Image 1 (cartoon, rainbow, N blue to C red):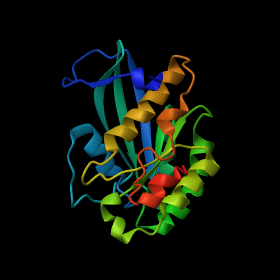
Image 2: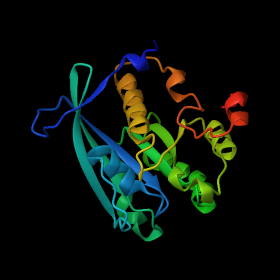
Image 3: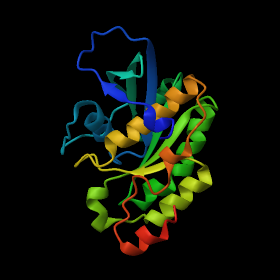
Length: 216
């Protein structure tokens, strides 16, 4: 069993518990890629079909037990619109992790990953843990970004990738938990175990050809 697999993340129902640590995670990406619903699905297991674009910055928190420590996780939902850039920049401060989200049905949101990578590098420390999220796989019939393209981009950037659906919850908890484990390992000087970020883990390999290729 790998080091990462031995770490169990336990959700705590009460927000009144005294935390040992606070962890800040930011979700970034173009407007409309589903950041708000991803966060709500993870924290409250809900989905709002009529969710509106985030204005400025919002955050939601929840407490978790990781091994013997209590963590209060604050997940910050940042607006994707250009006009909010000046007021959101400060909210990168202190972030230990970031989800860079695109919509698999929007090539433009995928093409903008490089822009978001540049922004996060400019505004955060070098040791921040990152994950690329390809959201809305419940709409894969409208897919504009292929799995192969996404995997190639993730490898190019050296960042793990998962495809998710906030609507039906596919891989949402898995993605957030994997990022939390990486942050926990970093805090405790535990070497990374790349198995948790196998590039086919969390990817919708829906054909025999893809499954046999083991490409990613």
